Image (cartoon, rainbow, N blue to C red; front, top):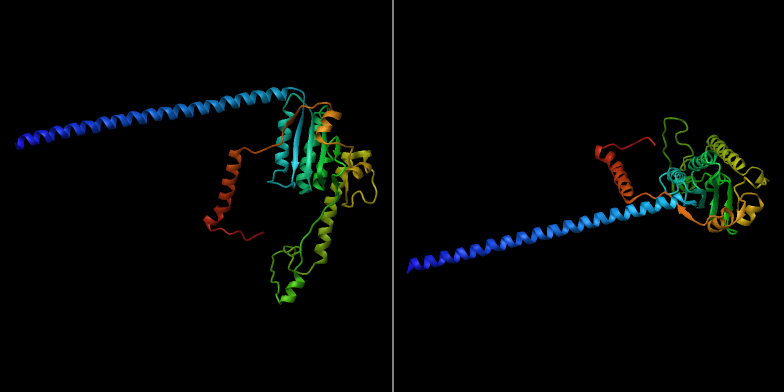
Length: 318
């Protein structure tokens, strides 16, 4: 009787084991099946993306081969590392001039200004391409604001247009800051500033004004201002009506700017393309960093910020 039970138990065990093996094999087949399904789906998605990319690229190349107006936006303050930087602007220009069908360029400007250095880089780039491609005219169109360094850039164009209500001009240079000396005296706080170099604490906001340093700063501002004036005169030529207020830092509406010769006409970019350039087809060449570029930039910035800390380095010279 015991032997019969043992045999039955062995048989049951064998059956269970066979079931487990069969279930395992079925599970493995299911996994392989879905693994291949995933691979096929991913492959199809990849091929679809590549196919769409190739189609879009072919359409882009085709569009760029036809007669069109290139549009480049200059929006926001003009500083290095920002969207409206000279580097980004020049990338847009380069891409535009590589197109066979390019017939004109419109710079759509909406900026209060920014760095005179960045503005000068952009000005020189426009003049360079104007000289290299004399048949491709460059137009600047002012939106809400085209002031200071933004107008510096616009002055390099063949012609400048604006809306009647646009704010245009501000041909000047400014330095601003705060002084806390009186506040510190009222609070009974004294400034302890020690430098190696008599002008290292140049116009320190917590120290009394130094007349010699103030005069030096004014000389620097005057030099930059004169460069700005020279570039505006170079760009606008005889169209500019100069009086005591032209280079004073004032800005004007589009209507006033036209009367003063700061702009050539009143029109939007669309009106300009239709009525003046006579080409309605437009392609945007404004440089926009890709997702990968933005991610790489953010990672690089984070690493650059953390590296000195990780190494125990704390910069002390500013």
